[in-house]
Structures are given as structure tokens and as C-alpha cells.
Length: 323
Picture (spheres, rainbow, N blue to C red):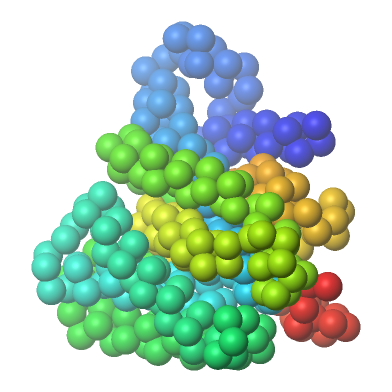
């Protein structure tokens, strides 16, 4: 109930706060079909699409992070730290630079390809050879691949001014300007990824005890691996295509859920669907007011929030496991 109240409050703040602050009475009037033309335009054309984008991107990143942490048994795993976002961003940069892609809807398949490739590569590199992923090796592999792809993306955009202009706002992680024509085609992918994650949750609970014990309990480890890779690709790829690479949401949210509600993945995934959008929306609202009337992209705000969180996690005892 508390999370639902917080989600409602953050949604209302996202609708109200901006260069033109709107009272809640005006928002309610517009939602009922009234209000003047300017208020209707601001709410219906700008802030509702932006808010809904924040909701779905936050949910996708939160669940993707929880999936990766459960799958790798590594509390430092998230799509940003393990390089998934960087791989998706590099694929999008290639599409912009070499194929002349200009719309976010045209980015999604390339983002899927980049996310899928890096997810598989990180797991293969970090695998111990016996089917289990070593947390330290997985993290190092993800950081290394993420740095490589980020460097290539930067070099590509700087060497191609047109690509740089197209990607500057997107690459910082932004919810601005995401209309319904961009948002609606992405919803089925994120919905499918979240549904698949919930279906995988019981198997991931068994997998937390170790691959051998999971097999003894009847869990199909290979099927779980394939399902996790597919779900992370859907969630991280789509969210990156929509809003650009937003880091640390997938790192923070599962930890908060785990600290408060325990280690049951079914609960962690359910909490992540609610908590991650709250953080994304509040970060977006904060970015609108810090240097108003200009804005700070949400990806930069979450980085400022998430970096101290990563330091805290790295300093905690037993930070390399989820047990």
C-alpha cells in the first residue's frame, strides 16, 4: 500500500512539475476533459507520455536488474554495470551512423541485438565452465565489455557529427519527447519481459541454492538460462531504445526489495515493478527543477544517486554473494 501511495504521488509530481508548474486542480480539470488549450497540450501531449515512459522504463530496468542479480547470484549486477546498456547503445549508434536511422522506433531492434549480444558474452566470459557464473568474473567481464562499447560509441558519435546530434540527448538517458507513436509499440515487449520474469521466479529461487540442488529439485537450468537472457534482452533493450542508457536503477531497486522483503524472487520482482518507476519519476522531476528552466537528463540524476549506492554495496561484507 505504501508503494502504491508513493507511486501515485510521484506520478502526480511528474504531471505537475516542469517549466510551467500546474496545480493539481488544473491537472484534475484537464483529465476530466476541461481546462484551457495550453494546459491540455502540456498534460496530454508532453507530460502524460513522459510520465508513462518513466513508469514503463523504470519497471523494465528494475525487473531486469533483479533478474540479472538472481541469475548470476551477484548483488552488483545490473544492465548498466554488466554492459548490457552499453551494448544496446553501441548498436543504436551504428544504426544512426551507418544506416541513417532517426526514430526511436527504428532503434529498438538494434537495441535488442546489442543487449542480447552483450548478455550472452558476459555470461560466457564469466562462466566457470561448470554452468555456474562466478560473480566476480561476471562483474569484471561486464565492466570491461561496457567500457569497450562505451568507448566505441563515443568515438563513433564524435567522428560523425550528424550521429552525435541525433544521439546527444538520447545517450544521456532522457524521457523528454517520447510520444505515443514511440511508446505504444514498445509496451508489448516490456510486458512480455516482465511476465517472463515472473514465470522464471520459482526456478530462480531454486537456482539460488546452486545449480546441482536446483537440478535435484526438478528445475530446468538450461531453460532458465535461456528465459533470463530473453527477458533481460526484452527489458533492457526496449528500455534503452526508449530512453537511452539509464544506469543504477537495476542495481538499487532489487537491493531495497531484498533488504525489506527477503530473498523470494517472486516478491522482489513484484516490488521492483512498483519501486523502480518511483525512483525514475522522482529523478526525472528532480532533473527538471535543479537548474530550471533547463533540465538535467534523468540518466545523469540516477547516476549521481546510484554511484554512492554502488560504493556502499562494494564496502559491505559478503557483497559478492546473495546468501
